[in-house]
Length: 280
Length: 355
Image (cartoon, rainbow over all chains, first blue to last red; front, side, top):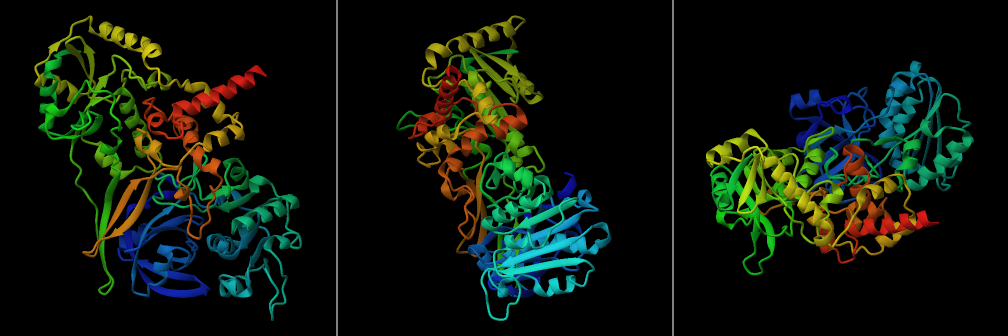
């Protein structure tokens, strides 16, 4: 085995202790963890854009994007409770244990985007998989041109990682645009779906890459705006999510056309996505 | 090559039973139906039985299999994990060439690419394979169209070809040679290879008259599917006939999709089970929160045909993911076994050609 997934924990999960749990927004919590086995901790080298299979003991396993980047000091997961297993995860308390397999998947291609402008467009918890990339890019500020985050959610209460974003803003030239779906008292920023901010942000077109992540409807309208602005298919990237059971390219639940999200993805360019022949 | 009298087939099975769990074609007592199954008594194996209703897939990829178990004590906050490691050596005696090719398709998929499927590998290693080449086709067969029969070319320890009262016995491995010596078989002499070729040619020649249930001239169809030639109408026509019963996937020697679930027992243990799954089921791609990217029926129902006839096997391995055993046609209540699907698509190609 080589490349992105070298050293992955493949078959039997490694146990990790939940050290701290933070409430992010409604139904979304961040779980900071550390591996029981120091070997596993050393071996666990996640790249930005990869995902893990998380076992909630007694409930089952689910696939989840990693929000943390190697630049972060502690590994963590941010998870919305949306199904049986994630609900069980939300019932856990610090000191409880979870199992982890991975990291799996291809990750973001940072080498090839050096020197470019980087636009992030996130909808709701779509910021989770993009977080690791933002951390990386801000840490290597000098390697990139303009860095723009366009972020929207249903309400101001549902913007993820707000404290963190406030801190990131201290990085020189990190431009941010926020929007919420409906007006609310005390909100002075723009109101409307996130794609409506693409044009006002006057995103650069030349030498630019865009990372887009969010619910399917948001994704489609944002892509339209980015293309209209002149960004090329191959310069738009997203991480796709699928029902996954094995994470290693065997169970086939995440097959889209002839690609498997778990091993060929989860990061795809829009140029690739267009040829997959399925809904996002 | 060696000669083995047909009467010695039982001795062959008995010799293997000393070192391996024995699997082979058997006849069900009540109904006489041919099934591929585990046997305790070597005499139960019927080499002359018709192609079994089920493929040997479950020998290497059980319908339901525990891949791990664990105990989590929430009070003490301790986890003890246990990986099952109870795989015994297996002998498959009397496999048909199509089914052997099915196993080879599974090998390429499960053992190849970035990760190896460790559970499959554990079943597959320590296996002895005796293939029984088909000296005449069964009515449902179309292995000549999928390049997977009637004789096996690779992947066996022993290949048997019926020749009157004898079998021509070819060793495909050191293990096979050792078995020939152990059985005290005599060398077949210089003319044997030619005789085998004649027997197999005669078998192929019988397909037209005897394998009448299915015809599936697959190669051109694969090309047309892969190049996007087939219109959505025809996929919808095919998809509309699907009952989503999953039977095709379960009798297919090459279908390999699975589900994984953690099952809690009363004793406080949790078993991580994997079990067969089918891409034709609606819930197959449904995610938590009810989003289902493969919602349109034709997306879902036709995934299997793309898998078999275009991307999965063919783009990577240059062969169809179908081995021509005809089982899916036999079990499908909607008349969309692979052979029929190929026929529908060929009809479209012909129509388009006539325009």
